[in-house]
Length: 147
Image (tube, rainbow, N blue to C red):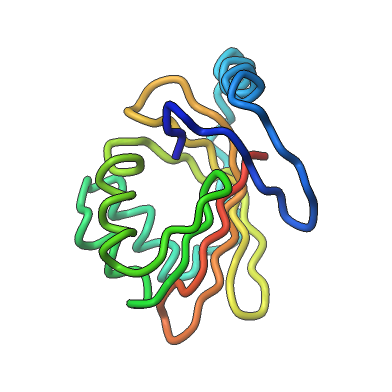
């Protein structure tokens, strides 16, 4: 999720951009907040989204990749990651080993939008909004943005 050289964040419908220093302040500020109460999100997650989060929890890169269509696109911190090979590399280096807490979700036609708290490497953390477009039971596009 957060790479050491991360520079920008794209927000849904807009041009929210954080410089690297601002991004570190946002992460630090969120890390200082109390942990969210363990409330259940509205209804069960879409099965493809659930497979994504289960794969991260299980530290299973192959299962995470299998949640995506072969030509899927992940937009993360302004970068486009395309296809299984790139998603596998991204997941191994930046996602697997982290801890997610699903805070809320909003199912929508063709996908779901999920508010999460992500703790890379299981420490610190920040809130993010994940918008998954899902077709045929697979994630075809994932837009990951800071909340």
